[in-house]
Amino acid sequence: MPQLTELLPYTLLLSGTAGLLYVVALLAVALVSVLASAQDRRKDARTTLSILVRRRPR
Image 1 (tube, rainbow, N blue to C red):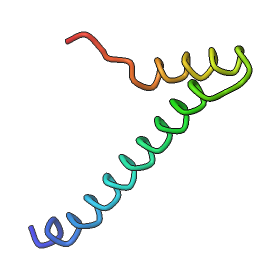
Image 2 (cartoon, rainbow, N blue to C red):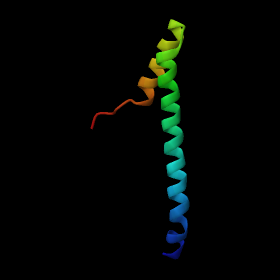
Image 3 (tube, rainbow, N blue to C red):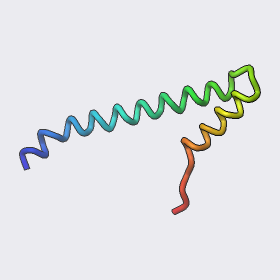
């Protein structure tokens, strides 16, 4: 049990960092999908965004 209490802060830090990176990636793709001047690039960004935020049926 002492190992669990030692590893918990590192696990929380790692999962928080991964979540933050995911949000930054989503934001970047969303900005490209709105602000890109080329139609193909906007379409590709929207497709990528739909893949990243895909919801699975329960």
